[in-house]
Length: 170
Image 1 (spheres, rainbow, N blue to C red):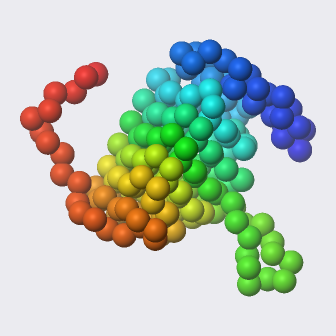
Image 2 (cartoon, rainbow, N blue to C red):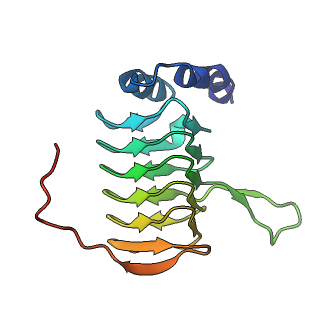
């Protein structure tokens, strides 16, 4: 509870930081318990509900205005990208119970996966390694590795095949 109270002003350390201050934001997130890869990029407009429930892999990128509603664990793998205004939701309620108890199913975004702009990834969903979630898609079921899904509800569009002739920038 105390950490949650401290995070209320702590999140302004992210929001008020200059745009290129990725190292500062990694430091602040780690200060509040997040496990963050050395070269992860989190933009200053990203909203993280509970940083102690966040894991960001090496070179993971979290874009502008992303909402990470991580009442439960959220794990974003190495070299994965979560584009602007996407929403990763690791919290819901059990509608089958009259008191609607809180549930905190984890969300996993695999290595080299891409959650495109405005997409929603729901509680308990795993986006597999190398998968792509299309823009504004609503994902309520696991996405297999190296596939592309889009739509509402998200459905399989095609498999993702990498062009081996493209040179890496890193």
